[in-house]
View 1 (tube, rainbow, N blue to C red):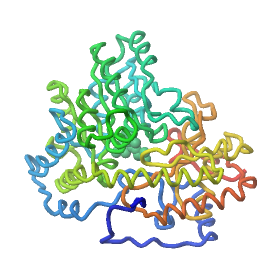
View 2: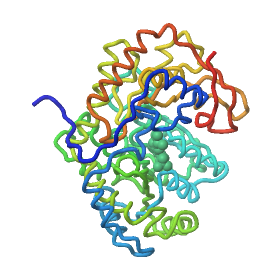
View 3: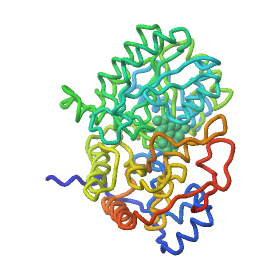
View 4: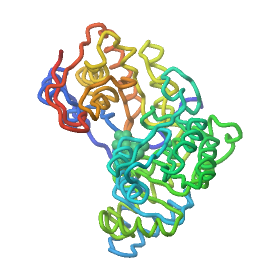
Length: 454
Ligand code: F0G
């Protein structure tokens, strides 16, 4: 059979409250045109994020009941550790309540004033934790990764020449080399196994540890299996193990590729670093056998890790985004190609050239998609990145709308609905106008700014 179906059937459902366009227009105005300000039950298809929003399986809910809430030495922690180490053979597994907590602890070990930390592209919270420690975050993604039209199979790769030059230049101030798989900020694009190995080699040649931000490790491994020479016949767990075998540690948001609604971890091989991390963990998260989590969360994650590497799931997962990208591309909607692992990215700069970047074309698309169809997406453009540390405003490099898909949550007809909504928007594209900001906070303005149409 050629049709790729959802490899699950539905045992428990959550009704979607349908709304009218007039209702949504009023809700959007009341939220000052900021989609983060909406009530989620006024949203029909919520593509704000793939983080913590996925559906747990029957086996995960069963594992929740098995969870043991002992403060110290919980068997849930033993099951969680075994599940992580089965895929990522690190010596120390340190649970945290989510990814950014692991990053904060990592930066308590490696950050500090004047230090320089390279990656392909740091995710916002990683960058935030690096900068909060006084260090500088550097993005060294290959040029193809910033070109929405390049069909490079591994657009998340690190620019190895740039990394080597960077390491030579900053040898004394680089405490650690990082890489994000997949590259979320760059469109959910994968990193090849060869690139991961080469980055590890460069880091180690300079005597520096190499840490992977592994949030979407299974989607990344699926792309390696599909696209990298010599990997087609290998199992996903084997590819995952190879990716992490060359690293000295990892940070993880288990809200992504562990099918969790909450959770994360920091993994390390070095005993001294792990001891310091656990001290910090006790201060900020909890005892080392639960971190910031309940025992039942640890059990749900242990089970989730055994499900996320299933090839039928990964085939269906990545096919959803590829399907939407193909349909939108055929309709003339500019999209980032090839499709990423967790989201579809619309290029609003190309779709709405009439809107000045500082009138936020991607924000205009996101607002209109909500009005048309109740779809909530996320602007990744000048609203998110435009405000500079010196207070000036500058257009972002790209004006993207991210449609991030929660795992195992929506079906094929929901995907068709998204495509149809983009078609309606396409039919009125010349009439769409931009926005201005009427109120904004000091930092991270996209979450709480207020807007008005121009
Ligand atoms: N690293 C990456 C690559 C991420 O995508 C995220 C979260 C984090 C770290 C932080 O993890 O949320 O558990 O603290 N990304 C979400 C998103 C929020 O919508 O892309 P967290």
